[in-house]
Image (cartoon, rainbow, N blue to C red):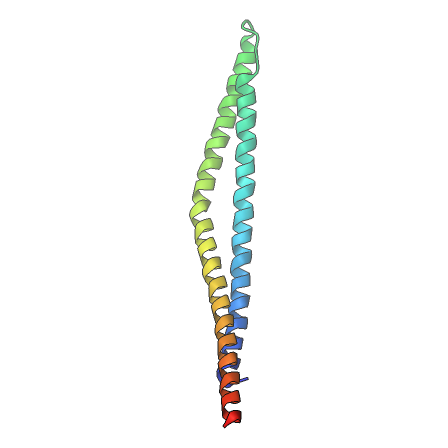
Length: 129
């Protein structure tokens, strides 16, 4: 293997390690965003159930309890939506960084393979002479 191919191999290994770290960071952020989305969906479902729950028209205590629950859950929903909106740009940035790092690693690996193939072709041509 030529010296250039060796260097490309080292760079490719370093790039793979970096890509692995970027992919792990993206995966962690995505898991966090998915968990927050599940929480949002659960609060929405509970809110819809509380709103749709039949209450007796002559039971003001039940109306107050339902209104308090809806108000509380609505605030929770608003806060969760704000938190999710806050992490989405970071999630997208992590995804882009992971894609770039993975692409860089693949490009270096392909460049190394091409360099090896070219060196082998050059060696064969010299032997034929």
